[in-house]
View 1 (cartoon, rainbow, N blue to C red):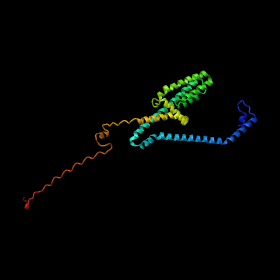
View 2 (cartoon, helix red, strand yellow):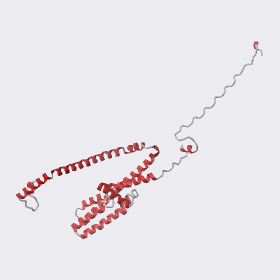
View 3 (tube, helix red, strand yellow):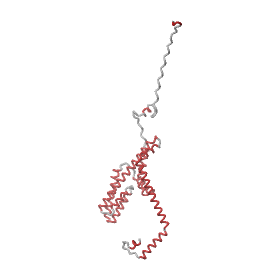
View 4 (cartoon, rainbow, N blue to C red):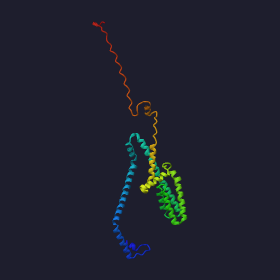
Length: 289
């Protein structure tokens, strides 16, 4: 460390007295703030351990969900009353359809935005075009505000590197990418799988940011979309079951036995009465009548 300070590549001459003074000041500052440094190190270590534990748990659950997710869901549905199992299954299917559609669509839109932004910034010769494209890709996962903020950062970098004209061109191009995303990519990829009003999206992103920070802003909209899909499925009355000619429900409507009931045994035919035994005539003594 001492050699690095004395022979640093910067155009700064460090004298021996100055070097010793810096070392003494650093040592005294470390001694005065040792408790604070230890507590912050412990907090950082705890956060790292918690993050690693959450990551391991997520991987563990994901493996089992992929391997036996359908069996786990069938077990869960078997625990609810039989009359509501179909409703639970329909609501879960609607929620999964919405969540998978939103996730797939967001990933495809983010990849498209990142590629378009990277190509556009590279053509203009803006420095750090690849990191800025990655930033646009990540920002797309935050609805309404993520991608615009990332693109504003790209415009600021262009302004600092190449001047006002390039920054204006970057701003116009980024606005065009945003219009392409909102009017072409999202309707084409997502369709009506996530049909939420922009006010609901804005309020959801705001509440998610306040509650959970960046992670809350990312997961707020899909959670709201899934909840709305489940609610819409549950509030829709189930369609009545129409009996078919071979459906045992027809027997119920005709006054017949209930479904699942064993058919009544046919009454046994009455036993035929035995004919009366013929009485031999009395022939008297000697066999004469």
